[in-house]
Image (cartoon, rainbow over all chains, first blue to last red; front, side, top):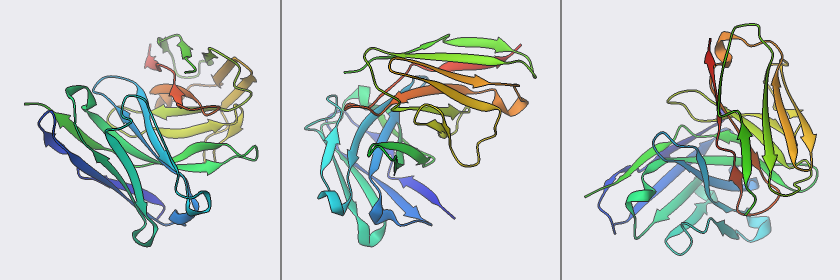
Length: 124
Length: 107
């Protein structure tokens, strides 16, 4: 079955750290760009960042709100995507989704598969 | 950053109704636009990419149109399972940005 399964969410104090994981199965993980998207409680969707594939040197992009605090990485041998979150703030409280990117003919990428999400709560 | 503005923010409709949701980008994004459906407590699901291409497995009563700055998602005949929140998203440039969502409720 083609799926993405996130894990690692939980309660953390402001200023703390947390590492999320996303396990991929049923498809060739190493071929795909992979993203993280979050959703604060009762709010809309916010893009967090992207990691490209090996062919594109695993380069990354980040939203300004998380740049310098969050790091996206991947281990293609384990079909896994990671989000290392440091210096967490209360406003980082959200459900975090991993999303697979599909390439369009134009060379751009859109989200074609989402995980079920994992909740991160930043509170004292 | 490219701002994505959806309208309306919510609407009430009946089963069988034709529903139209609009999405406007703050600058031209060609056809680099996607639409997603999200049901309460669930992850988003892909509906449309490249403004008008239907994701595999999505029912044909969904359609998308537009290019440049103005886009539309149309549900030709609303079904009970279509009551959800819909988001547009541009993938023309970083940071990728989403519209604020349109909640489709039962009248």
